[in-house]
Image (cartoon, rainbow, N blue to C red):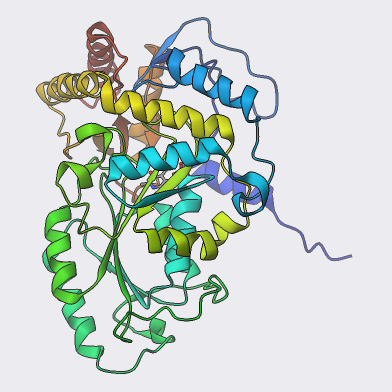
Amino acid sequence: MEDRGFDLEARLATLEENELNRTLSPVDRVAERGYFAQSCGGELPVLDADEALVFASNNYLGLTDDQRVQDAARRAAATVGTGSGASRLVTGDTMVHRDVERLLAETKGTDRALTFSSGYAANVGTIAALEPDVIFSDELNHASIIDGCRLVDCETVVYDHRDVEDLRAKLAARADRDDAPVDADSASDPNADACSGSDSSASASSDSSSPDGTESWLIVTDSVFSMDGTVAPLSALCDVAEEFGAWVMVDEAHATGLYVDGGGVVQAEGLEDRVHVQMGTLSKALASQGGYVAGSDALISCLVNDARSFVFSTGLTPPAAAAASEALHLARHGDARERLWENVAHLRDGLETMGFDVPGDSQILPVVVGDRRDALALEAALRDRNVVVPAIRPPTVPDGESRLRFAPMATHEQADVVACLEAVREASEEVGLL
Ligand SMILES: Cc1ncc(COP(=O)(O)O)c(C=O)c1O
């Protein structure tokens, strides 16, 4: 009989040969330090004898093991339940969902907010529900944005990273063609990166064109880019969007909770009234799980009806919603943000003094070493010194741009940052990078 299955062994062997195989390394707790286990496949992990410092977590404010956040999750589990039990539209909508959404809307300066079961689901569901005719997307946008674009039967035009002039040129070129009636098959445009694998049933709404009846355009960008630490020029992007009448959607996954009053870059730059869709996640600085979209009343009402990842997925768990609420409250009113930015400045300064170029302008500090084998060697040498900073390799970053992505947390002591820098110096010398 013919074998019509999948040759997974061969796939894994190829990954291994190319040093691209990724494995799981469990830890005993999510905090600035912990006991890790070596990769153990399906076996039960055995924790290392030594505690390691973690300089790679997105738990930027260190709130995952804050007593107040944990108590909020516990209380929600005890009083509301451990799970939502159904889609929000059926019986899964609870007071804790409304509480976190109210607080998110207040922080983001919008009419309303809506939570999803993950940031990934928020991006995919929102982009598919808006069903733009054309999406203009930064080349380094997160995979969940790219997947959202793929779900829509539209044209996706990719512009150079943070390059407002490139975006303007691409908007102008598209506007020249825009006299033609809306053409859903425009994905065949040879000048553009077309979406494939579209799901034209993604939205139940029938009319995706703009209020003028012309094409609907969405410019979408991360605010803080997760692997590069760069920050999008949001104000300039809004200027260009307004010139062409396009909407702007900003993914604040790595910014929510970290900027003014616990907001993101949109708040830091006072752009609440110019950004149409503010998306983010509860799973990073907000120490929980889930995603959100904040925007106008009409936007949220449309998403409640049309975002398939909202409609056809169980509501966020009540403990996750309550933990995020408490974390957002602490991000707004505590001193965690200040402590984070102090640690970021200290670590950046130390890495640069050592001779590393540390691009970007955020809490994410990438040290690009180039070859993936060098990145793996540096990761291992750091791990030998009880510092955990996993190497980032293709496909997450382009070939030849492998890196270590340092991310300090608010809860690191100064001595932890000093220990990390010392380990980096020794490890880099050992593997020949310094
Ligand atoms: C920029 C960006 N957007 C969206 C997501 C997805 O968020 P979540 O992890 O909550 O699914 C991530 C997370 O990795 C991200 O980095």
